[in-house]
Image 1 (cartoon, protein in one colour):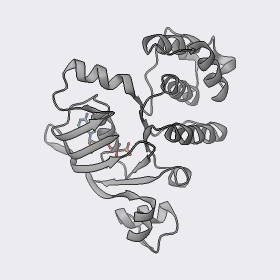
Image 2 (image 1 turned 120 degrees about the vertical axis):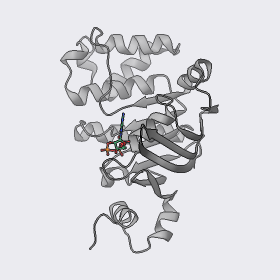
Image 3 (image 1 turned 90 degrees about the vertical axis):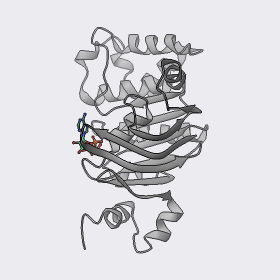
Length: 244
Ligand SMILES: Nc1ncnc2c1ncn2[C@@H]1O[C@H](COP(=O)(O)OP(=O)(O)OP(=O)(O)O)[C@@H](O)[C@H]1O
């Protein structure tokens, strides 16, 4: 379960997120979309507990992010995985060592077998002994996603996950998010690639200039934008960035 109530985030004098509210039940996949600078990454980072909200109430994986004390954040991190668009990896570790490290700190049962399966699934098996600094951008992305899946998070936040991925990588990522949601996880995918996330998302969160323009499930989206036949058309109508 993930609930974001009246989230506001001020960077000094700039209001990046202005009163955004939405909630997602377990099993939901929310597509977080909006123009550059809309406040998507800021929202994700607040939900992940990486930056404090200026005001608002955030409940993520049963944890209330109100006081940002260390025990609340540690509890949150047990259940949440956040994969930014340029994931920070450990320069001194290999691909296999990343999986081993994450498997150990999250105390993942069968971590060796799960790691092998995930590296195989994300086509990184032949890179198991490669150092993180030798990976391509897409491989770094895949490794960060594999690390996130390893401990089976109940909330997964993916910020622009498809930017560096090849077509098989994108397909596998989307398939795997569907599987994780089916198993009860709550997922948010922030992306500009609307056609690609269209089939996988159950909900749409549209932001623009820090404000929420639309939140609802796919049926509500159809009701609100009856003439839109694609997610992209609904997006344009919600943000009015393009007129026909
Ligand atoms: N650390 C920061 N300090 C000051 N302003 C910031 C900071 N981070 C983001 N902003 C501003 O907040 C606004 C929202 O930025 P954010 O990165 O959340 O947008 P976004 O929707 O993720 O954009 P994009 O699609 O380009 O990634 C922008 O105007 C941005 O310039």
